[in-house]
Image (cartoon, rainbow, N blue to C red; front, top):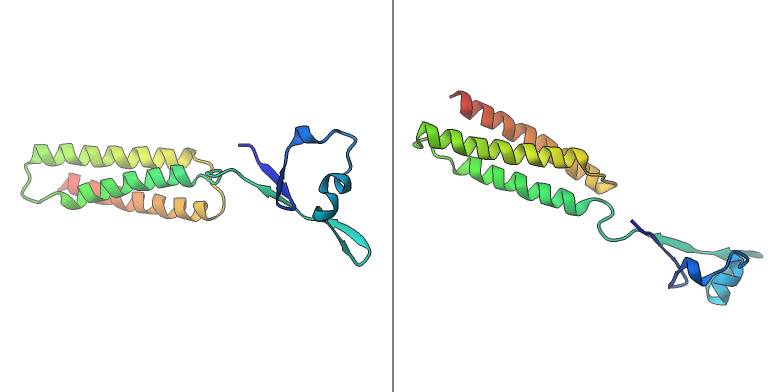
Amino acid sequence: AVQQLICAGKAWRGIAFGDSVKLLDAAGPKGMKDVMGVKVITLMLMAPAGADGSEEVGRCEAMVDEASKLLAGMGADAKAEELAKELRVVDDLLAKASCDLDNVKVVGAQKDRRRALLQRIDQLEQDVAKRKSS
């Protein structure tokens, strides 16, 4: 993931500045402010879109939602073979989502979202186990 450095509303590119260029010169008069006699440069480091792992967590959340819908749609009047087959599908979706959530690198709010999804997966897996045993 490539991060972008921004100063005074302009993206800085590494090749635009040689090794001998000072930050004050690179920022120019618009990028530099004088605060109580000290020259201050404000820089912003921008991560690319999706760097927090939100796309992967969203994909896993969709799998968990699908598994939840399948589990909720199972009727008690279904045959044992059909019920077992549907439970295997639900179990597979939950396992894939759980593995993907374990492997994804997340930061910030996505950590809480992943934790909540893993708890939801655990609860759904317990429901699947109850249905398998009955």
